[in-house]
Image 1: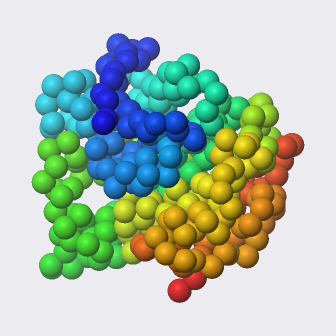
Image 2: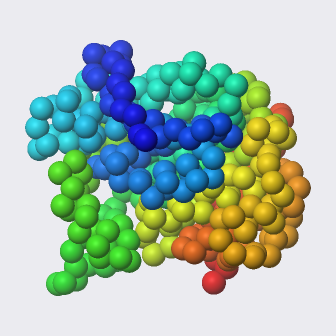
Length: 321
């Protein structure tokens, strides 16, 4: 059963977060949601991660969800970061990381960020690489003006019958649920954050880690949602995290073939090159059979630098379709 807790950040803002525990977890996933939404929208992903043996910690970031209601007192200001802006939002997420590490010092910690959450995750890894054993980036990009899409996300579906939420998912019920959710906002990021704070999203990954990660090689999974599906496209990540495993025996478990079968719920073929430990400098795609919805968009990539693995530059996504 989920547990709700809170802490106060450096600016006096109360940050609300949930813990979704499992017995004898094989690791911890810290989940970072996207802009305008909240952790409560990731129920299916959390269920899948729990089923794969991971305890999940998920907060409502500065200005968002329950934190935003506590912070602003009104849903009209949801998405506004408040005093300290983007830096304070990032530091609040780091504060939760420290709480997780204190409560689970012996378990591997996986940082999973979607969209805006993936940019926060990149910033955190730049500053605190040794705190995390693996990184999962979904709906992400290199944090540069020519790769980070600031245009209206629904532009390609513009038309008289467009709802404005087609970019969220090909399933119209997902867009409807977003609109009906009192803790979400469809206000664009630039308007929510303002140009000065939005510009702080730009930056480059370090070419060398500030500290060596305890997991060697340090693993990264980058995903792109097919057809604009967001959190729904993450159902395959328990397999991805387990298949692209590091030398940490706590993350290594059953052979990849068994992991595929567990993820697909049926017999599955083994993707080439996934049977053993991940090899630096190679890109591999997961099998079509590893999930029912999103294996076509899941990618595992890694580049080794000084014993730490981190994707440098724009990720290359290859469609299996």
